[in-house]
Image (cartoon, rainbow over all chains, first blue to last red; front, side, top):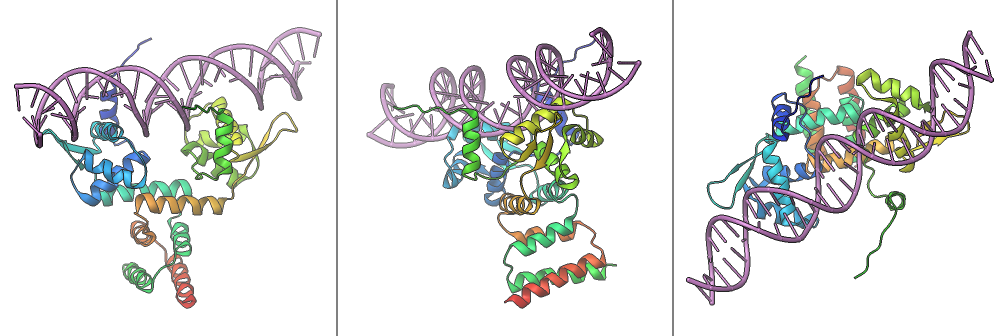
Length: 143
Length: 143
DNA sequence: TTGAATTTACGAAACAATTCGTATATGTTT
DNA sequence: AAACATATACGAATTGTTTCGTAAATTCAA
């Protein structure tokens, strides 16, 4: 028998290299949303934003963002004392990824039943419906 | 200062009574999908199904289903020795719930941008597009 | 320059999800 | 009946996330 052992950091990096599933936790996604929306930010800023919705300690936010840096979900500039964090994953890319996964797990792979249900659940404005109709026209023309 | 303590089971039940967010884990959702698709089933059956996709031990599946019973995600008939499990949550209801949450966390609440992206990502057949167009007509008429 | 505030770093505790070994009970087969 | 297979129950190990206390470094202000 052999026993191989790896450091936590190595395992983390390996997972990323192998592109093993982009799967942020809820907290991580919350933080990514803030970084996507507001651009590169200090921990203090992100923590304040989070606290608009729910109570979170400063060091909690810090810790999570440090772990996100390890996972390469964010990058950070450590030139000055207060580090500046930036999202390291593209928002559109991340959304596509999460959407595909969600369709698979919750709608058994049927994107269309998701679309139908999303349309049915929410009140759409005339403009929004027009926008969708335009997209559908474009899709029809492609064939 | 006061300190109150509760049993795990009590906290679990309280969460359910308060309807604190339907939030199955990935494994739990996987199992619910099987129960929704195949109806009331034995652990053995569910475990076999799971093992078509990935390797899971029998007792692992059993344990998760027992916990799901505690959470009232499933009910079980214990009349005969081999218990029969049934989904205790409605599939459509669960989907709506999960979809709303997903729109909030991943698309910042915009169901329409989700619809647009879902339509863009996947190849839709003419029939499917027609179906969506019909739904849009219905929605437009409602106003 | 001394003290207060802010920040990062580190580690440990609390909690939840997953996994599995093992004990025990109940059927089944020979 | 004995041996075997199958099922549930239970508990413990493992892993990952979240939370926070505390120390050390740095900045800022009196």
